[in-house]
Image (tube, rainbow, N blue to C red):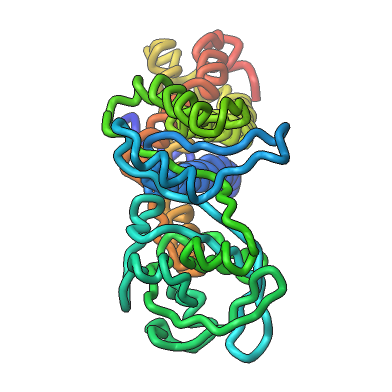
Length: 396
């Protein structure tokens, strides 16, 4: 405890220099923490979005090398009858427009079957989901998220309202039957008009306006929940489709679980790269600690000589300077943590999303700061400890 008090006194005697060093460390710590929060939050958001898709099976589509082949509604009905299939859902997307008798906005139109939770997790805030009669009758109904509803109608609960939707250059009125949560629409909240609105329609309605019963993809869930069986069952589905479609080999299968694993690994790599980039600033701050401590050793040469002359050991001198280096590093770390927490709270408020430093991030950063103080303080401390007391006392 006495050593820490002495270190505080020594640092306080050179307030400006100590403050500048702490600021440099603070900037380094903030760089590491902010990049870490952005990386972890981004990865968490993407993983949550992938989890919300609910697709833990495979998707069927037509190989682009066979432009004359396509999946149609009859294929969907055939797949649903296979004994090892739990459920099959069509996926159709189109780019269109949406308006409320005013300015037209770009929109991505997502067509799906009744029981939309088979494809994407939708939290219904107001109204209800589309039903089987909407699908079979190809009715002009839709779901939209609360952000889009508020933009068009100045309120979230717009159930029963009419909205103009353009599909394939054909504009018609659609009745809003449900409003879904927009909690996951982070990009839309941040980037506004740069991200198109997402509207959910009966897939049969999109087919009607496009003038074709083609399906972009068919998402399949198997009866078996063992992911190791998905490849085998996927190939079994392709063979069944080949027989059904007169020996065609244009159908391809994609294991969604494997694609999710690849994306997760890619995100981990990006996270590591960003952390390394952020650590560079911390290394620069650490070099600043070394420089400041070396200057301090030079200035206190006579003081070191006196301490050694009255019995201080080299280990005591080394410990004294190491504690000072650690205090500088930890002081900058604590300041960086406080400023980072304030910064991400402001960013979270602007983005309407909760951003927080985890306890693990805080503790690991404190540990890194202590290690950083030791690493970059050990050379000046050793330099001071190795001084000859006679030579030290001779210096002015």
